[in-house]
Image (cartoon, rainbow, N blue to C red):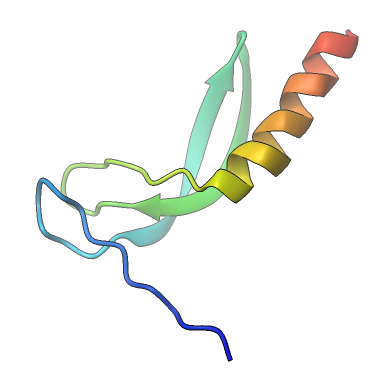
Length: 64
């Protein structure tokens, strides 16, 4: 059984909510849902996202 962890914004003390977020890397953009503070907009980027999605985009750009 996996535990669902609530992420809290350190600055605002609000629970992060999943929001579609735009990322830009080397002039190219992609969208993904990430936990984001509804007040200040700070995002949480998980290690999994970095290792999978961002790494995938990086490899695609380097192949061009």
